[in-house]
Length: 270
Image (cartoon, rainbow, N blue to C red):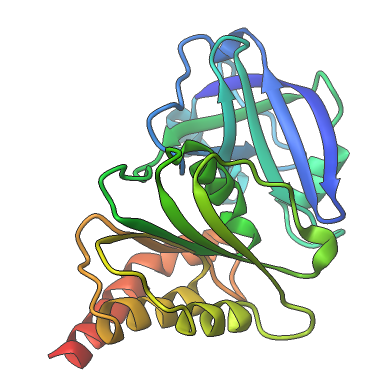
């Protein structure tokens, strides 16, 4: 478990809060291998005192489940090993949810505890082209991936956000066509699925990064694997969250949901 301290809090769009964390606890931390590195933030339950040093295994063995810290997963937007600074972006929709209101209340010097990093995707320089698609939850990883792409790489990035005010400036040296999709009042992922469906695929081997709300990821998985025949090896597709579920509920059912989806789509492909 890592303990860090807030160095800065910035509202980079109306619904995105950027946190920069630092401190001696980040000595030995590393998040350089993947562009979808993530950490699991620990949110204390109000009124509960935890043992020091903070030990999650001990907490779970000694305290009832309703007193365990809540966990929320966030992508590493940037890691600066020389400065020992970790940047994460948190979606904030007013008082809704756990992570957003927490991030909006933070002040420099506040303590943050997290586990990680995990991760598993980075752009493959040997791919002929790249397709990246996601909603706000996938935006930090997409942005980090575009920064990692070599200058000779070709990519298409489709990013769905609530409206034009949520667009961010993205940096890349590659040949990238970025398409911002504005959701408005439509169902999350609807515009994203339509845009990817209409893409005229270039020749060659594509590497996929498709993440966000589980419903549209399921639709795109079928489109890409079953209808377009993209080979599954080396691809990264996953539901980061699901409408109607908090992270605790989604993580508890995610494995079964993914297994059912694979069985359904494997049957469609046969």
